[in-house]
Image 1: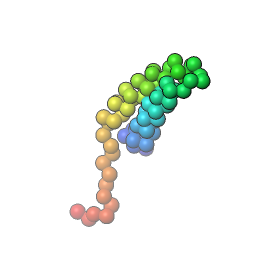
Image 2: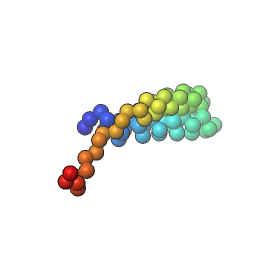
Image 3: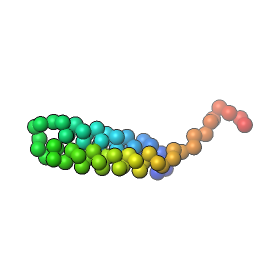
Length: 67
């Protein structure tokens, strides 16, 4: 597995989930630790998504074409 495939399969969705988790942590009233670090989680996820979305995807070969 190349780094580009690993990025596309794990890192980019992981950064999106971290942003969503950070927003949920900010909105919940029960756990002070999650509320305290919710903005940090959101910002780290945002920066990670900005970095991972700039990495180009692997060039997919078209197996059906003969040319």
